[in-house]
Structure formats: C-alpha cells, structure tokens
Length: 155
Image 1 (cartoon, one colour):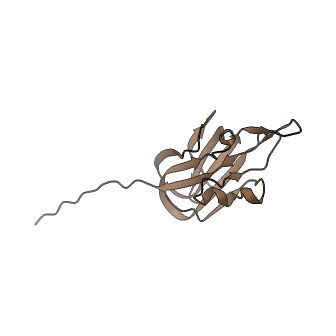
Image 2 (cartoon, rainbow, N blue to C red):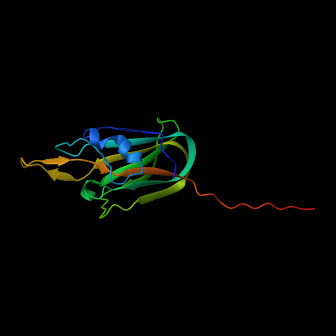
Image 3 (cartoon, rainbow, N blue to C red):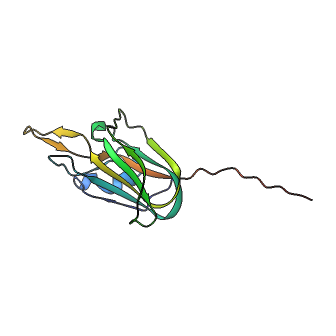
C-alpha cells in the first residue's frame, strides 16, 4: 500500500466526516459526503505525493452504513491531476460488509487516484424525506506487483 499524502473531496458532511478519514488507515472513521435530496456526483481524490507505478486501487465500505457505498462509480488515475484514465467502472455495485474491495488493472504511472460516485444509497430523515450520501471508510492505492527477473552470468 502507498500512503496517500493528501485527499480532496467534492463535499463533506461535517467535521467528523472529513475527507482525511478516507486515508487514515482506520476503518471506523469514514468520509461522508453531504446529504442531497437526489443522487449527486461526488468525488474523492487521493494524492500519492509523487508519481508511482500502481496496479490496484482499493475501497473499504463503512461497516455501519454499507448501503451508502457507491453503487455506480468510476475509479480513475492520473499522473498530473488533469488527464484521467478510467481503470474500473461499476454499475449497480452492492457490498454486504466492510471488507476491503480491490480493483486491479495494468500498471499505470499514477500520482492521483479518484473515485467518482454517481449513485449511492439514501437514509430516511425523521421528516420523511430521503437524503443521499456517499460513505467510504478507506481509499488506497498499491504499488504494481514486482515481476521476477533473471540475469545470466557467464565466466
């Protein structure tokens, strides 16, 4: 795993739901987007601090609110934060627990990894309306797997 240096979210529910929670290696402190009356595109972008060779991105749902994990989303990577490559797309994704979920892809030079959530679950309010949120316990990127190499020595 590569320790992310910083993170930026499109929105935050409040102080206890900071985007930094998504990179703190603590599955019990999730990031949450602000609630909306309809699904909104929400993004979370992690900065690895420098370009790294990456071949996996992982997301961990929040254990208490698994229904608020993104259902329709893209995972994208970028060297410069401007030009993005989609490495995984999900539609109708469902999770039942807070296990780490890993998406693999061919090795890419990556400084930034982005989750773009288009649809997530909702919670009923006491007033009877529905509010849509994105909750995510952790987002991580992983160094590309090393391949074995050999050399031949001749005397």
